[in-house]
Amino acid sequence: MAECRAPTLSAISGSGHSGLQIRKASNSEIPDKCLQTWRKLYIPTLLQHLGTVTNPWDLTTFIEKAQELYDKFFPFSPHDLTRKGDHRAQLVSLFF
Image (cartoon, rainbow, N blue to C red):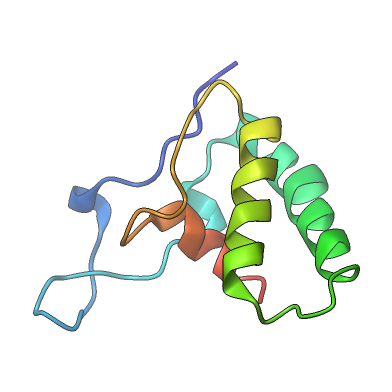
């Protein structure tokens, strides 16, 4: 199965805080083979989890669960969602 890689800095455009050109990540940057898993499994499972927690605004718990699910659904593409400036975490944030 193809790897689901985050966009590279060369693909980033827009205006950032430090003058760095950045833009929000989008689903169009996810390879087709990974997009189906992203849309039909990863995001719905993450949303389902949010419906079970006492405090859905606790970002520590959210990121931990997002990482756990990412590791489960995309084991062939290891990635740390807590990394600053992570584009996959930005994609997750599109849904919230």
